[in-house]
Image (tube, rainbow, N blue to C red):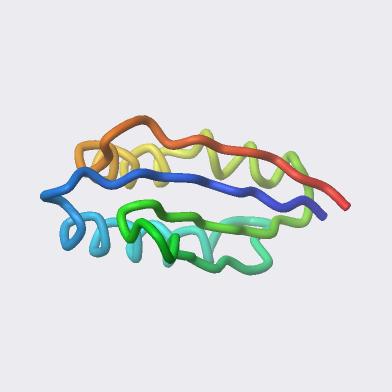
Length: 93
């Protein structure tokens, strides 16, 4: 199994728009092959700093989701709400 840590910084005037798009993306990910679970986190000191932690069965499952049209479409909605590009870190234990 692998964990995927996605770090995002939301633009100051976009939190509500981000929330709607991010929820939709997570719901889409639930249907992805190999997806096990996902959680979202907010930085206590900066509510515009968000994290998504997902668990996938394999690296290939994550790559398939990351390169999918569904995720690309969702990111087209999320990207305009971000102050900078998201950062993705792949972790294993």
